[in-house]
Amino acid sequence: MIGGLVAFIAQLGAICFWLYTAVYGLNRISENRGAAILMCSFSLFMAAATVYCLRRKYQWVQEDRRLKEWLIANAEKIRNRHVLFYRAQRITLETELVKHHLVFSALIISSRSQTRWIIKGKESRSWNALAASLYTLVYGWWGFPFGIYWTFVALYKNLTGSTVVRVQDLLKPAPGKPVGFSKDFQSRFERRIRTGLFIDGEPVGILPAEPVAKA
Image (cartoon, rainbow, N blue to C red):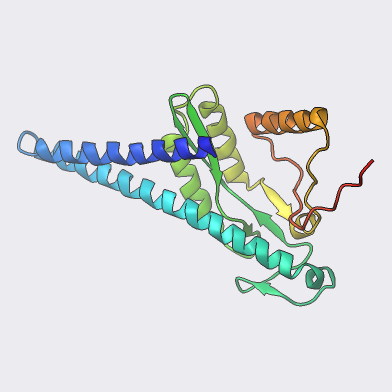
């Protein structure tokens, strides 16, 4: 939560930087008109593109929440092979969903986010993959220690569309909270390792977690 807030503030800082360079270019227009116009235009474009990506990231979160709610509400019908459509596309247990990755870095800050789930083979993923990759190319490199590594991995995953999950893997009970300090610590440690290495873990079920039996 705190890391996400810091990354959000850093991205707002990037927008302010591009706006500042646009104003700087305007102030130098009398000295070198061509270069100043080019700097101003490029800076305004980058500021607008960054604002667009921030807005889209918020929308992607909302769209994924709606998809999750729809899948939970229709889980039994999907299992029973009813004919159901979401975003005008037929959804079955075998339907594959794919996501693309964005990386933002600023010195010691590096954060990752994702596009919404796209219905693989039925919805075009080209624009989302391109937008995520361009954003990562511009902002992903500039952080230590994860920025450069995450950038390479994100670009590879975006190009290959390798972050894929099937609907049937989502329609499982969510994992229960580990019982006991050692299991909780191990779970958190393994999750941090996967995050640091940018490894797609096993799909996590979205249905209500099954109650843990008491010893």
